[in-house]
Length: 369
Image 1 (cartoon, rainbow, N blue to C red):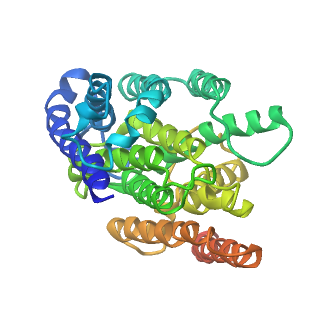
Image 2 (image 1 turned 45 degrees about the vertical axis):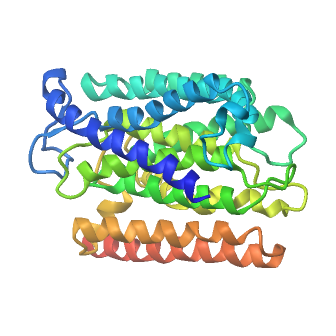
C-alpha cells in the first residue's frame, strides 16, 4: 500500500510544483494576472493559471501510467513492477477508457475556467457548459449510488452533484491556500476511505479510485507550494472547476455502500464535503436575502465572515482546514457503526457547522445598525 501512496503522490506533486514555476513566468504574457482591488483581498497583481499546473500534475502521470499499462501485455513482462501491481494490470487496462473519458471532461472544464480567467465568461454560458459536461458524464454511466429506484431522479441528482461541487470549490477559492487545501484534505480522506474500506463486490480495497484521488492530492500539494500565503500563484477558475469536477466524479466511481457495507455509508461524501457545500449554500442565501444575484462575486464567503469575526486570513484558512478535517473524519467511521452511530456522526457534523453559523450571525448582527 505504501508503494501506491508514494507512486501516486510524488510524481504528481513534483510535476505540479515544477509546472507552477512555468505558469508563474508565462502567465503575464497570456493575460492571466489577477489584479487587486474591488472585492479582492490580495494586495498585488498575482499570476493566475495555477489550474494548468494542477491539470498537468494529474494528467501527466496518467499519460505515463497508461503507456506503461498498454505496453505490458502480460504479468511476466511486469515482473519489475511492485508485487501488488502485476495482478491488477488487466483491470487497469480495462479502466483506461473510463479514466480518459473522465479526464477529457475535466479538461473541457479546465479550459472553460481558463477562458474565464483570461477574458471573463458570462455565468449563463459557463453554467450551460458545466451542465453539458455533467450530463454527458452521467449519460456515460457515472451516477451516484442512492438506492433510489427512479433512474431519472438518480441521473438528475448526479448532474446537480457535479455542477454543485464545481461551483463550490470555485466559490471557496477566495484566500491563499484555501480551496486547494480544502480539496487536498477532502481528497485525502476520501482516498483513505477507499483504501481502508473493501468494495462490497470484491471485498478488496478500492485501489483505482483511491489511487486516482491520491494523484489529485499530489497535484494539489505541488500547487499549494506556490499558493501558500503570501501566494505567488492563484489556481483561478481553471483549477477550481477541474478539482471540483474530479472530486465529484471520484465519489461516483467509488462504492460506498452495498453488500456488507451499511447503506448509511453513502453519506460519507457529504461528511467529507460539508464545508464547501456549507460555503456555497450560505453565500447564495446571503446574496439572495440582500437582493443581489447569487452569480455576482462579493465578500460574503465563509472565509470572509471568519475574518469579520476578528481572525487573520491565515487563521481563517486554518479554521476552515480544521473544520473540513473534523467533519470529514466522520466518513471513516460510517462503515464501522450502526444506524444510531451514523445518526450521531451526522448530528456532530451538523453541530459543528451550526456553531460556526451562530458565531457568524452574531458578528453580522453587531455590525448592522
